[in-house]
Length: 174
Length: 206
Image (cartoon, rainbow over all chains, first blue to last red; front, side, top):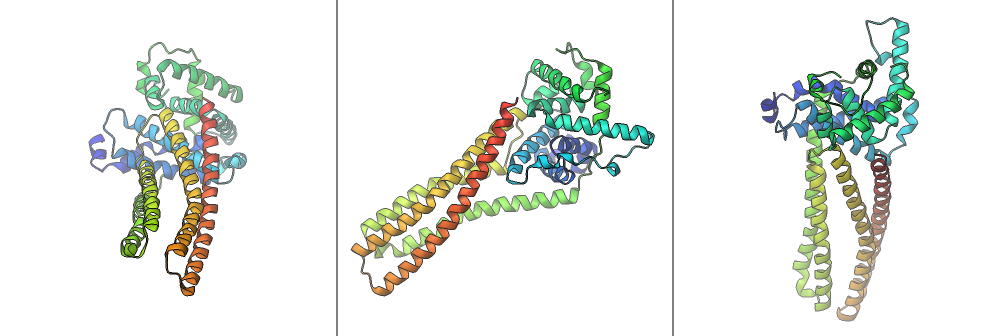
């Protein structure tokens, strides 16, 4: 796949495989659905451009997550010229967006509320803690997180511990 | 934890409840996601490239009319006027190069680590503030230059009433354009300063 991507092919495959991860990155920075979509498009463009420079030094997943977080930070800075995005914090996830076929309506409602609390808590974290925590929640190892963020493994551990403590205060039943 | 990479982790510096972590990860990954519109991405990518190329072209071509006029009318002006024109060009050319360099940085960003990205972004926004300040002050400098040129013409040129009228119209139009440009640059400066404040706050929160 790496060879295909460097040859300018296989972008569709990358987005099919990692599209959900990129969408979750957008969700961790923006609460409003329209803004999430806008950010996701920006991330997708940045990833598309970035993949042509990919040399295979790391996994595709690690590489695109690095690009996605960088693009999201740029997006947040650019939003200063717009309305304060915090006004959208009261936008909930929208019940029609949360679909599960394996849970009862009560379980779904409970999970929906838990998820809403989690996302609020994640968005409230300082930037570096947010990045480290969400990368960990996506299954990246300490080494990979250290590579994406430019930190040492120990520093990743310390930040992650603090971030999880903060999240658990908001999310006691997770 | 979801992938095999995590199995390779040895002695993590923190001890946490695995079940709790798995629950958090599962909850995180259960969130609704949006599908990427690939055709929109392709269209945006193409339009962004075109936009950046146009900006660079316009920046580069902006000097051509001024240089052309200078070459064509060189014989008509005195040494003082020549000195003024050359001074303006020499001052403005490095600024043009600097602007092109900034656009190049913005157009071809590298895949840096997230911590470096924030640092670079802060640097870039600081540069943008500088550019906006230079642009803002270049407007009244240009008007001042225009006035100085009029004075030069008054003393060294052969001014007829028609020429005076023509120059007054040109100066008034130029002043109006420069005023609008000043307000625009000032707004940009304030916006970049707000962006800088946001980014520096983010960096301090680490």
